[in-house]
Amino acid sequence: MLRRAGIGLAAICISQQSLAGTGVFINDVELNQQQVSQLSQAYQTAIAPGEYWYDAKTGAWGLKCGPGLALGLAGLDMGGELKADASCGNTGVYINGRELHNMDLMNLQALSGPILPGRYWMDAQLNAGKEGGP
Image 1: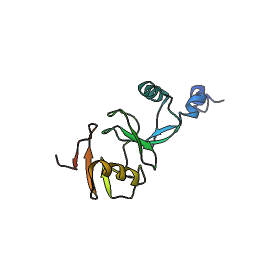
Image 2 (image 1 turned 60 degrees about the horizontal axis):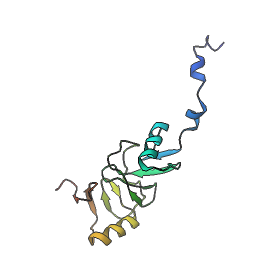
Image 3 (image 1 turned 30 degrees about the vertical axis):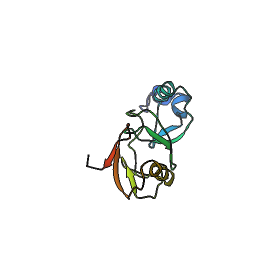
Image 4 (image 1 turned 135 degrees about the vertical axis):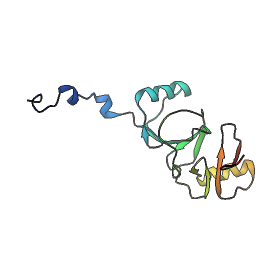
């Protein structure tokens, strides 16, 4: 009866694993099992399910709507595009498109001194400048 309706059994038989997903989201995109395994190997630790933001230019990452938790490997091609509201910041200071969380701004200012609201770039070596500038 299913064949007559044009629906093959392969389309109906979806594995439990693909239904369950990994529960690991980076920049609002769920990673597949292979990507989670690659991260686990790279960081030598299990990756807990959750929603994370990740800045591929610096390697900074944190929990969605939170400050940065660590600097990791830069340049990983995982997850979606880093969004301005990834940290739910309200500082007016943007680095690589993400508005910094208050804690991020305080920590950065402890290293560099006052930072005016604006848009900045930063790389994995922590070189930084105004967006569009050197």
